[in-house]
Length: 185
Image (tube, rainbow, N blue to C red; front, side, top):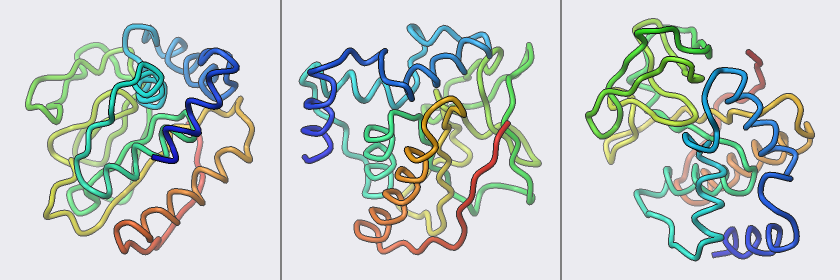
C-alpha cells in the first residue's frame, strides 16, 4: 500500500513524536487532560502500527479511506453516518466529569477529559473513540468526516488532508463532497 510505504519512509528518518502535526495533536490531548501516550490519537496509533510491521484492519472502503487520511496527515479522523447525526450543530469540546457514551463496541466510553464531539442529541465520538449510534455501516449512504487538526501544525497539511479525503472518497467510494470547511474549537 502506498500510504504504508510513505509512512515507513518518512518515519525511518525521524521519530514519530517529532512530527509537527503529531506534536500538535498530542498537545491538544494533554491540554484536555488525556495522556496521549496511553490513549493514542488514532493517526499516531495507525502510524505506529505500520512502523511495527502490523497490517491495517480492513473494514469497508469509506472507513479504510478515513484511516489512510489519518495516516497520511498524522491527525485523528472521525467518520460518521451523517443520517444518524441529529440537528444542525456539531460541537467539539472537552468532556466533563460524568460524560459517558456508548462506543462502537457497545461498551461505555468515559468522555471525561477527552476531546469529544456531539450533535443536538448527545456525544457521537471523538479522536479516540466513536459511538455506536453514528458508526458507519454497510447501510450508510451519507458520510461526515472530521479531521481533528491542531492549529499549531502547518495549515497546508490540513488543506492537503482535505483534498486527499475528497479525492479518495470519490475514487474508492463513488462519494461526492457536498460541503467542506474548517472550524476551530
